Image (cartoon, rainbow, N blue to C red; front, side):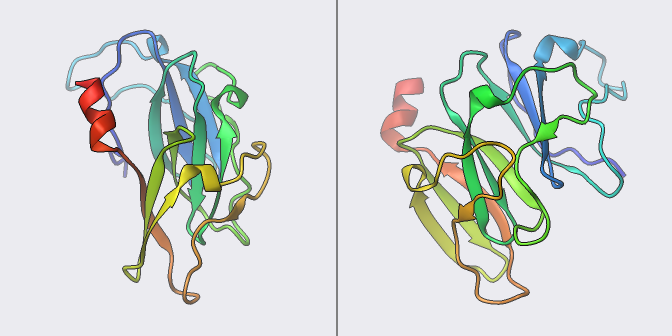
Length: 174
């Protein structure tokens, strides 16, 4: 029942951050994942509790000054400094990134963001918001976060959110 959730190109000296729907995250050196052939099964990145699943993967620079923005299904989220996610060995359970469940619901995803970025969030009812990252509180890992998007009813959920890349910023990276 495994599914591929993301793929990223790395430079051999970066960190991988995996986040689960249950609010856990693990950061490890990418060199812990050995090169394999295309028919190989791979290695375990994160040990999951029963009924949990990995929802996002980010590749981080070891000296990253950014923050990790974690968003939950019920519209709550928060920013946490990337430095609060210590490097561990892969295949562990990780550390709490946000208190998932209850008010927050499960984690939708986690993204690396900078202070001047913006995000776009989309709900199951088609509501779309664009908001500056600077308006989202920076908090410690083991907290619930703040409301980022107000949902209309009990059946509406945040289904996806992404960082908006300004065309001027994209041109600089080319």
